[in-house]
Image 1 (cartoon, one colour):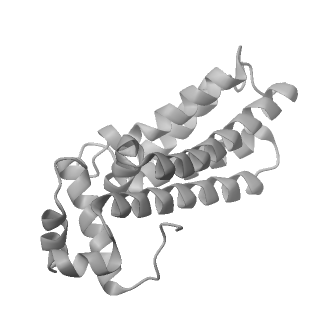
Image 2: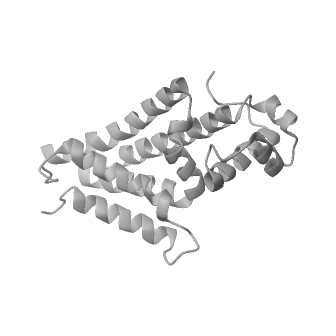
Image 3: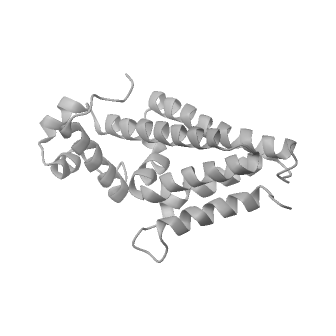
Length: 196
């Protein structure tokens, strides 16, 4: 099972409803009835598309991680120098977490609610995300564009900072999405020691 289902209006409504419910109440605080009611269908109808709320979380997590990985891989391919690549990837990563804070919050903070098999599959995608950042940081150090004492620790710091945007950022707060993305990009470049 891939966790991806053929798109349909009902399935899309269920995924959107589950995302909102998980973000609001957490996985364990959400019932299948909550999700079905938000989607405007019966709990029985929900099971036609997804066998359990864990399967819904898996579909949301898998799709989200695939999208963000594809996004940063494409951003990395656009840049020439490590500095350009890191800036582009930081913008893509920051945008994914700032523009879809509700979805990103569920994708990043409900991982422990997945079954071991599903969690392992999602974690492989997270490792792919880490590899994109780590390869750029390592290339920047090798090219003397970055000045960091430890490539792995720097990578963890950069990725963690991006993930956390979905925890604290609210579009109706004092900062625009563009401000948050720009600030994240600039902070990432400082962490990498660009121009030091």
